[in-house]
Length: 113
Image 1: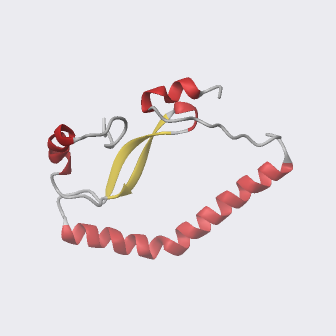
Image 2: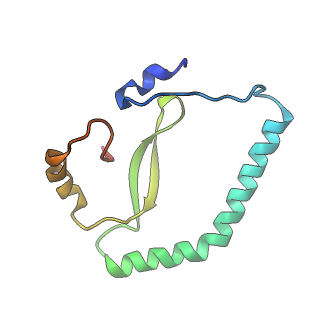
Image 3: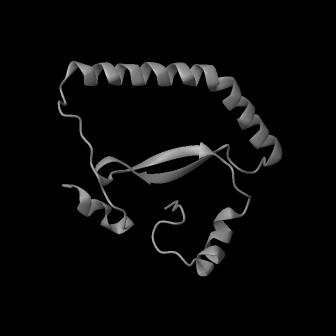
């Protein structure tokens, strides 16, 4: 668990799984399959994504269609991620009130900073 120290702030156990051969042809083939399948699914699902975006804009025109937030990824590196907006209008304002009632420790709320 070489990179476990980077996850200490989350207080989560870190298990790092690595393939036995980084430069193998099988790993290259897997990567190509991942890219092909994800691209195909994006094309197939794009009408559904468009419908969801339209429904979000109809129901909450003042909110953005995509909500952006930070995620901790491989080796503790932060990156920006997006999801369809699925919260109420003043969710960020209510977050402070909810944190006062929070009984848990750790990363319970998503941070937008």
